[in-house]
Length: 245
Image: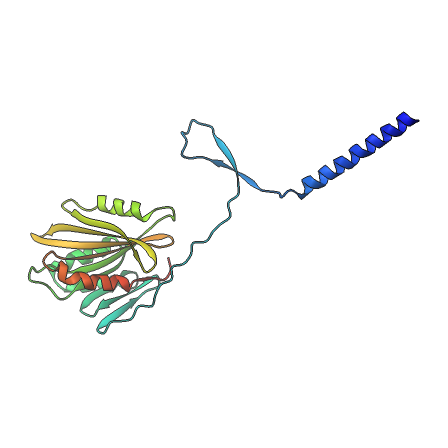
């Protein structure tokens, strides 16, 4: 009887310990896992990591200050962006006025045909084309264009700057480039020199990284006018706002 009682006591103790362990297991959080293949490894290496599902973190929206309009400037307001230009600039948004812009540039004469042809052949890329009616001594037509291209969030502004610099047409020479910030957005600027119809030209290209697109603002002018115009170019860029993408 004593042996039987001892056995029952031991059995009861084991059952109680088992119940406590089950309760502890039930209290452990249930962490979902996904199979994540490390793409950095060679394709013939079969390494698979089990990692918890990452929590989505929303990118903070830049705090963009309100632009104070400058006297004598006009606002170009579209569904996707807005920008201010001096009134002497002629042209405008391509998405909303492409037919009128093509006709307008053709009506201005042979030297403006390039602008009409450019937006006619690239209607989905160009968002704005505008020319300054004020010419310098060299006769170069100062102009501003805005283009946009889809860009994944992981595509860095540094990579975009390198890509644009390398993709400039033959005869362009990059003389300066730098990473900057424009209205809270990651940005870059590229300065390049070139020849156009035997006239020395110089342009500054601004890259602005939006949520899903890379916006490219190009300001081209005569090399002899660049220094006197750069402040105005900076003011125009400062007025640029992305509305939707």
